[in-house]
Figure 1: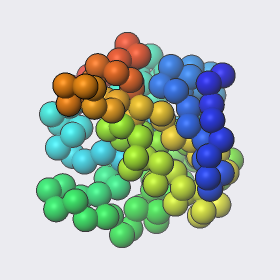
Figure 2 (figure 1 turned 45 degrees about the vertical axis):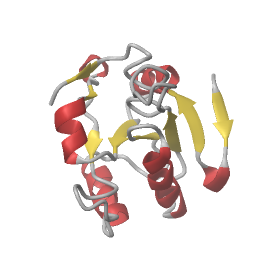
Figure 3 (figure 1 turned 60 degrees about the horizontal axis):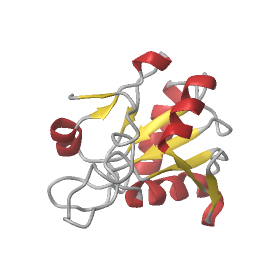
Figure 4 (figure 1 turned 180 degrees about the horizontal axis):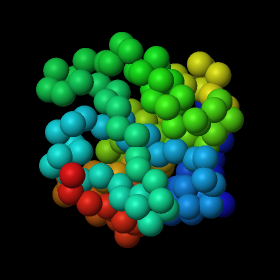
Length: 148
């Protein structure tokens, strides 16, 4: 299990480990905090093989980049609708892991005890040629995804 404990009770979990845990734990949830534009143009994780759908909620609104001031309350409502309690495994994903870490920390501070950040995010960090999708992340790990 490749995890690393970090601040605010949130750990980083590699994409493949996240996928395994989502498949094994029926109560676990993947929360994609990217923007609508990213979901539409870059693609989204496909959890159909695990019998699930990701939760989609922007951490920042596109195109302004302003933070979603209602993120915690909106996500709490969405999790309630899925019957995901405060002990559920919540896996937060964004493009490369920065926004999802912040979102996971906010939810951990709100009392959710199973918050995890997907290390490398969906596309991973920039490579030496300033391209994404070649170094790390969900796509590079060969995990299921689709265009939305």
